[in-house]
Length: 330
Image (cartoon, rainbow, N blue to C red; front, side):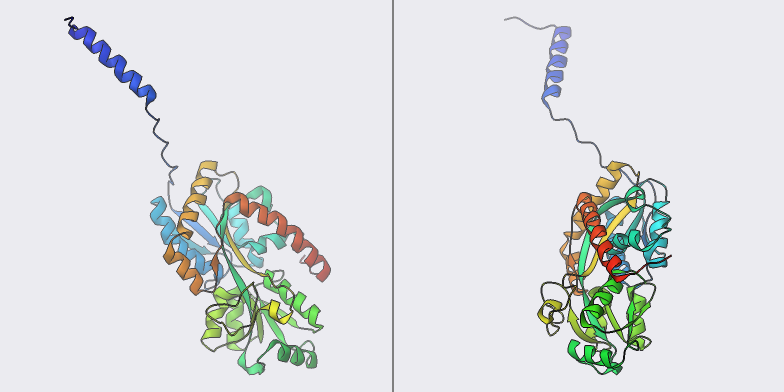
């Protein structure tokens, strides 16, 4: 029997190990790491849809990436102050914008002097949710249906005040389209976000609101506001007595608040991809879905390219609505 010397045996073992190494799968690269605190900028006042979502997602994202995540409110200029802050942040994916993306889609047609370019300065991360609009009134107005609201408005032209999230916001445009369809003249009053608009109607400062269910439905279910109708394909589970715009033959039947997350353009692609992946995982969690449903919304998850496509399509659609309504902000 032929024996191997120690040196020859060592050579065989090395060759064998080397051969197996070539056949073994290469270990996957570690997920890109976040180096410091992450900020979620909400370009509206606390208490609105974007703010509520940010505070649901923030702790989950913090646990996923191993860094502190804070929510920072920067309201004003129909969301553009906060959006500009993210656009001008360091290009490292550590500053996020959680916003009603309909606001971004309307801005190019509304503002002549935008200080940032949506396509060039912001990078989509992913869609978050959809919440239908709720049409509601202050109890003192004394109306119980859309027909009664239309009759009251016709009898009081220019006197019925309708709160919105800001000039050119999605709910402002929805109110303009509904008023035109019903041939009534409403006085539109802008506020710094949907939460502020809702509180204004609850207090009686304004009389009517069309706004995201997340911020407004709780006031309806508590009896502080009178719900009249809701957009979307189906009635809300938490308010089954509210008819849909479709049932009533109103325009803007599919209108609502689409919420999404973006970051600073030029951020490392691997960081943006990690954010997008973690966001989808968070939105798939049952407790997150339940919290969003309790607010009258539904998870509308998707990849970064889905949000990009949505923005492209709806920027064009809103441009036509804005042109027809003659709305412009200098």
